[in-house]
Length: 105
Image (cartoon, rainbow, N blue to C red; front, side, top):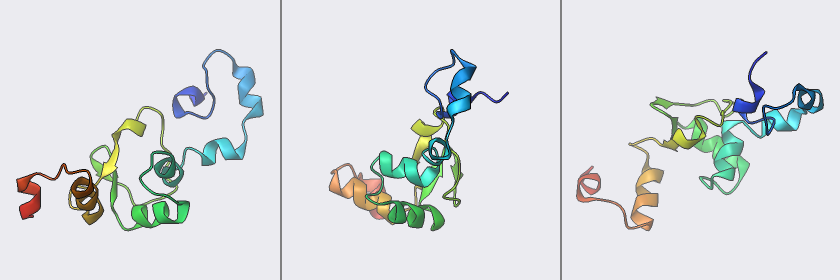
């Protein structure tokens, strides 16, 4: 059996009885585009899907272009903008965290 608690679709590892009540929506909430909206990378789901398809998002070291990519709880903390993303630059500029090296590129 796959460890569904680590993927985030059930809240605890204590009981397999929770697996009987799994719904499709619990899996849909773990899609990358939905997680991006939850993490405030985008305001709307359509916007999040566009960011992913255009290659602005990376999960760990890999750029992900599939909005249906399943995000586990373990890798949720490693979602970030691609270094070359203009959106990343605008976010850093807005938060006044853009350093001189980034400003040159």
